[in-house]
Image 1 (cartoon, one colour):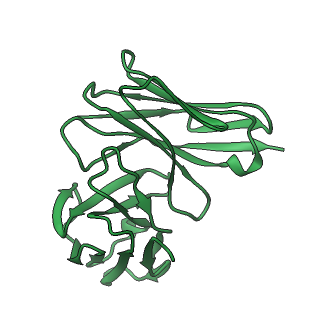
Image 2: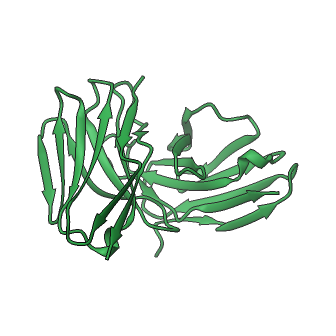
Length: 113
Length: 114
């Protein structure tokens, strides 16, 4: 079945610098890849997603890139700000299911002032 | 105007007790979920319901029983609570499955079993 690996588990960057979180997946039939942000004490919230027919998607300071051949996708955050501090999760849909997301283990992003 | 609301937010209970967590969504979504998040932040799906019908039932002890009286509600009942059940439980919903649709999470219910 589908497996999603996420790295790093913790990322600390200086405010204003960029942050990159990477995920790999195993099921070549997967075609939807969302990223969720979980702030302390809250539930995860979708911040950006990408479908397999697109290589890159951008929304202001965040972007996601997808390499279908290599089966990996990445989240890029530029000009990081203190409010970007959170846990970020990547996910992928397995090819056999319309109702299930396979989640990465999460990355704790720390923005240093 | 909370989209996905779950109660209680905090629950401390003794081993062996039975407890329930209630969840309601006012988004008109067809699909609802229960997720468990452990202390290491791993998110694990437990159950998924679509229009009150069970779609996904991951490897969860049968002490956990979801109940969906209508498509806006998905409650979680846990029998004979164990220490390992301590976690944060998230209810969530999405329009039609989660392939290509945003999942909306509740704020979580912090369960501590002592």
